[in-house]
Image (cartoon, rainbow, N blue to C red):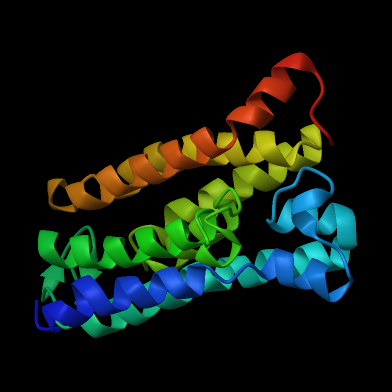
Length: 222
């Protein structure tokens, strides 16, 4: 790894946590005189923001939450993208293959961005479910997570259109992401990314456990 280890394993993850902790949904609602934690589902993410403040504000919150996941990992990737393979028939010419150490540093930054959203220190460590920020992390880890993320996003859109349940779509998209990644990148060298993808999707499902209970009971909001 050519990048400074202090930067990659300490400073960037810390910055990612601060960026991820920015509660855009809460701030948008607060600007309208609403405490998002006390209305709707009580969640400070884009879905509740859209229900309470209006669909256009929910879209804005979603984009901002995606951006705060993508930005830190894009910076981390740019700092590390220095070792290149001359040619690989499967990957194409001059495709960068990160080492396990580089993957770990890259993923640590993404992990702290997601944790910032889920456990934001601005709101006494109460945050959103992490779906939009996880999507940002996935799209920002180019190209290893990006293609599988696009697949998962497509599944999310289809499930929302058919079922009208955002929570169900998020759960299904999380379940699809890992198999899609393993299919697109069947390389043993990427085992840190496979482990991170599994942990990230498990976190999303755990954060939706109350939604799962309401879905099973037929009481989930559409």
